[in-house]
Image (cartoon, rainbow, N blue to C red; front, side, top):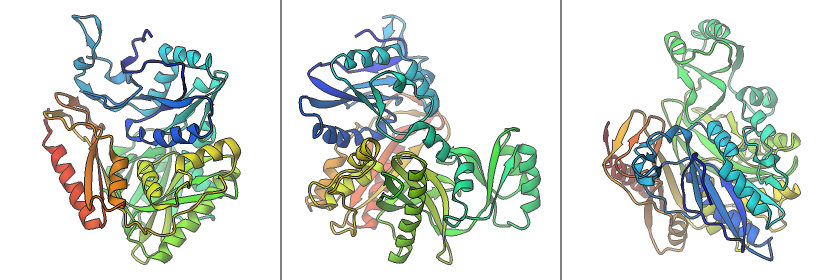
Length: 471
């Protein structure tokens, strides 16, 4: 197959004997596709199922099958001028691309469109699985192509913080908040509330994630230095000092059926920057039940509006134990794979995975009859994640081989074959200039108690730090 210039790397060879689906998203969610592949293998009777992953991650080596790498922002420097062709070894810059830019580039790729045409000649339908459904995807306009996830228009609506607070006001408890139209209104409103909301004012644009486009501000100088868009809408809410930042992962099948996968404690830095999660939550049973109840309420609203699939809800718990809603993530979350692995080891054999639940939700508006929620951590599985994100440009001087055995790690700890283990995932490799905002690697630590989980995370972060220096 001839590749267009947007394809920076591929190791895929088409085999008409397989039934394919397409994954488009970050490398960190690659493992989820194995669960979807197993689901489809039970549904497709005449062919074995395989998946093709289209990712933006720029690495020195890919220990993954059937991938295409598309990242226009990293295109410069990826061409071997002497050989006149694309060369993986010529990559010298690793940078994160905005998700909408990535999806637009994938949708416009002649290679990807030609691949879809080739696949559809041998199978009557092609599913596309997305890390997040967004409107920039246009591949589903091709006849025979279906998004196996939430509707992209509905997802965008519910990912807006403004729409969330307008829709859920009175459904779940929220902090005092205001919506401002434009920068001038933002500055006037925050100045007027500064004394009344003395602990700080949280400000967000309609679309923000992992600390981008949002901030906890303590004075007006911070507001003017961080937020500059004169025409944007802004959500501002009273900052509430708190101890816990729980997150709940769930799946919605219709306006009545909401599945709770689990609750984890988020690790938040600087008031709003997410760096990882810890499971199981340290919250008491009563607080956990409240979180589940509120998330079911939110899920039913999502279901009523036509949303089908995986979503998450973030909350805070103040010093008096009150639960306060923060936001919906109308997409898969960073710990979706870890919850899949937890449920696989903890639920009765034959119980559907999160990806199978999403498949049924999207295709049949229901969950399968053998659906089970996890009622206790009887396998005593504890885990934590850490996303090592670069704030200033760095250069990598070492390489940590990509680990693809996270599923086996969970199984071995659950079965008592290992007491603890940690894995460093998706390290970009050596001799790269890593741009600010890029994920250099992730750490996942699994054990039978939180103390040893934290020890594994600390060791993993230490290994990662040894591979970088100031650029």
